[in-house]
Image 1: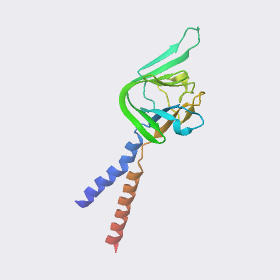
Image 2 (image 1 turned 90 degrees about the horizontal axis):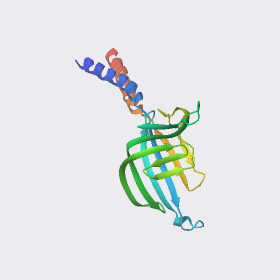
Image 3 (image 1 turned 180 degrees about the vertical axis):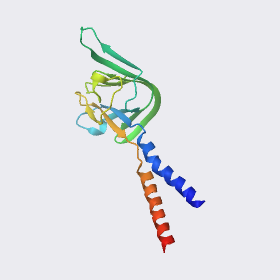
Length: 182
């Protein structure tokens, strides 16, 4: 009876990493504006940030193309509605205020806009020639203004804990067989 239970547990552990690897990659976006009272004094810098997450390959709720030139299609924007985001203000490493909202994220031809918070003159984190289901690229995207930028980081599914559990179960089987053989 205990071998049947052990066999079912082992089968579950061996199948779990396959399922974990099928989880989509989540991309975290952090948009930053820097406001300053005195360029020579960094302690006067006020940082405004917006953070949100999107799934890799997630279909936008709308894509706009400029097709005014015959035979040519130019990307204008790609929108994601009902995205949860956090807006925060910080100065000298201290968070002054933080609030959460649900809004629209727009990837426009020259940057990203979240309900009016716009990092402009910055490259897009995907190939805008195939924006229907964009594949995001991690990186630091700085604006030409130098006081705005955004960062994209990936949260990849982590099946390592399950692999450790599986290794432990295989070791337990080996020890049990060795004990029974002696």
